[in-house]
Length: 68
Image (cartoon, rainbow, N blue to C red):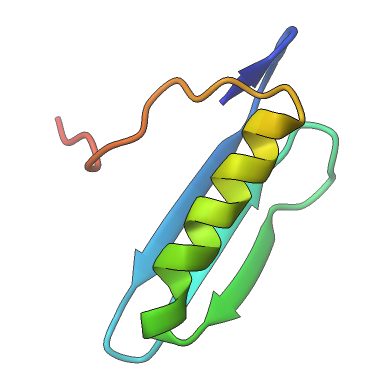
């Protein structure tokens, strides 16, 4: 995502053991990792994206991981 001169990264990961959302924000010293039950993470991820857009961020890429 971009906002003004900043870039941020939001990612969702689902495994057999659990799920998480990772946010890398240039205004924070450390990435933020929140864990969820696998069946809840997709909805929470969408909430994070909607809130970010409302706060002025622009989504640059919203799709499958890029390989290569």
